[in-house]
Structures are given as C-alpha cells and as structure tokens.
Image (tube, rainbow over all chains, first blue to last red; front, side, top):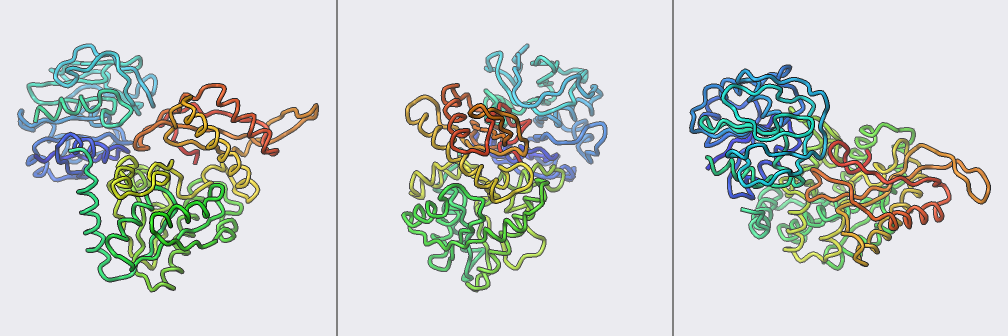
Length: 186
Length: 318
C-alpha cells in the first residue's frame, strides 16, 4: 500500500517515512507541489509539518484535495498539516498566545479513533506558534495541552485526522501507537 | 518492517558497486560510526580499490588520530592520516559566524580530499552522510538549521563524484548496521561527534588556544560521565561534551580576583538526534565535572549545565 507523505518542509518528514516503514507500510515522500492526480491515486496521504504559515504560504493542489477527496481515503495532518486541514475547511488558525517548543503534556479528552488505547496524560514533542483556534464543522477535539486547545482532532466519517504535536518523533510517548491507529484506517 | 540491517547491507553493497564500478574511491573517515560503516560497506563492495583518508583538522578530540587509526586497523581498514590543522586554523581566523565557519570547514575538507583523490587517481568520494545531515542542511521548503560539512558545507564546484550509501539512515540504524558488520563495540557504540569537530563547540572565533581549552574540557566530561555510567549512577547519555562560550565572568581564586572563560556542559538523551532531551545528571557528578574543569584548566572560571531540549535548542551549540 502506498502512502504519500507530502513534504511541507518539516524537519521530521523523513522520520514520518521511517516510522511508517517500521510499522510495515511503504511511504513515498513527495513535495508539496505534488500533482493532484498523484494525490488522488494514493492509498492514504500524510501532510507533514513545516516552517510556513497556512495564512501566508501557497499549498498548490492540497486545499482542493482536502476538500474534494473521497470519504474512504484516509488523510493525516501533522503540525502544519493539522493547521492546513483546519484552515482549508473553514476552521480558524491563529498565532497562539504562547509558543510550544519541546516537551508538552497532552491531556486526552476523548480517545476517538486516533488516540484509542493511549493513556492520559502523555508527553509529546511539539514545535509550533500557530494553532487551531476553532475547528472546522464536524470535527471532534480529542486532546489539549496547557497552551493549545486542540492538540488532536478528527472526523472519522471523512477519514480526516490531525495532530498538532509530532507523533513520529522518538520522544513522543505513544507516537507509534497513534500512527498505527491512523494506518489501520487505510 | 523495522530496519533490517542484512537487507540494507546487501542493497548498499550492490548500490556502491553500481555507482562506483571499476573506478577508484576515496573514503572520508572521521572515526565516527557513520563513516566507519560507510568504509566497511565500501570495502565489501570495492575490495582493495579504496583509499581511506582521515583529516586531522586540529579540531579533533584528545588523541583522536591515534585512537581512530588503532580502532580501524583492528577492523582491518588501513587509514591515511593527513595533517591539515594549520590550513583549517588559518582559514577560520577572524570568523565568528557559525554558518560561515561550517561552510569554510566543508570546503577545506573537500580541497584536502581532492588533493588526495588526484594523487590516488580516484574519481569518487564516499561519505558517511546520514539523514539528519541533509535534513538539517535545508533546501526546498525546508529551512537550513545548520549546514552539515558533508552536505550544505560542500563547495559548488568539486572535482569528485559523491557516493553516500547511508543517506536514508539514522544513528540508531547505523549502529545496528555496524554491529551486523562486526565492527568493534568501541566504534559501533561510540558517541556522535560533529563533522566540523570542536569548531562548533567554540562559540565565536576559533583559535588554537580555545581549541586546546575545549578539548581538555570535553575529555573531562567524557571521563566523568563514562565513569559514572560504569558505576551505575547514570545511563550513559546519547551525546555528552563541553563547549566554550566567548563570555568571561568574574571569580575568585586563592583570594585573588579572576576573569575567565565560561564552559557549558551538555549531555542529552536521544535515539536518532532529531529530538533530544537534556540528561538528568546527578548533582554530585556535575560537581565533580565542574571542580575538575576549573582546577585542571586554568583559563576556565565558570561551568554551566545546559538544560535545554531539542527543539528548541540543537544538540551542539552552533
């Protein structure tokens, strides 16, 4: 099964690829200028983090893909990817009151699909200033931290999942479990 | 599937054969696990058609050249040591900007390798570049965190073709490969050491005097933490060293005022170097380190312990 990992400039894009491989899934890293046809042909898509901001940067075919993709194709947004999903579907992304860099304590409010079997609280690694202030309609918030209200959100009926923290890095507790929960939905 | 070293060794050996063919190759060896694994793979792929070069930049750890030569000869690899320390120090004179330092070092390395390649009639340069090196060097939509000497620090024009068999690997996977290749444990388990060497552990301008100070401090940190780990007081950190700040602070020694350099001790826990947290070293171990540094290295008057994670900091200071 081919998972497209869209590289939006994260330090951890290749680590997403590595973790997917460790979990038995072949991933392919593509730039964020990837053609729409390639996105449509994927079995699942993971949107990486990145240094830019959803309100300032261009994301080519990604917003239309997020809006129009079939309901049975699983998409996971991480960090900037999480914000891009929220922004594209008319949620609100703003610069947070406080930044979060390094360790953060994540409190699970509702395990849902993505955080199923994950104990609360757990330590996760984060690296962001922007945050999702208001989720798009139809999404459920799964977890929060001291400074960020929506650390994870999902809309299982549309197979849209996203996290503000980085489940792919070694320091995030239960990170592999969270990615596994997503990969099971493909 | 988790990383499979047997499969990787097979595919890397055939990829090196395919890339280099019957040409001769220079191998850039630093004594770290990455370049040692690259050398071992190249030797499997190319047999005697390789020439391993170790460049002494003058910015190496204590007794590094001797140690590396002995370690590699035990692993069956003949090493040619090139002393380029004067060239490196003179090129770095007066330079204090970290990215500029890294680029100068990257270029100097290549010029030394080019000269060796010419003598050896070698066409290829084989390097132990691993994933974090090119990731952090930036490019495309990825920001440059630091130009690693073997990627972002490479000059635009170079007279050799590159071969980088470990590009997709991380440190823990390189170690698994090293063990599978039966490299000695002192090499496979060796803590990471940055390509630019002590240059990135001297914040600001580099001088031979400062290199000597930081070399001594690094040696003390290594000795004390390795001793503490052996005694079961700590888990040996993933990476541990000292760095020299350009800042001097006031002290008192034998009832006399002193005004001396500041040393930062850094020890981190990591798997792959992509994220890291500072090691929780017990105060009595830190105390021993600070006492030894300030008593054995007279130019240092204050010792700090770095309690920052990555992100937001990086492991090395520059």
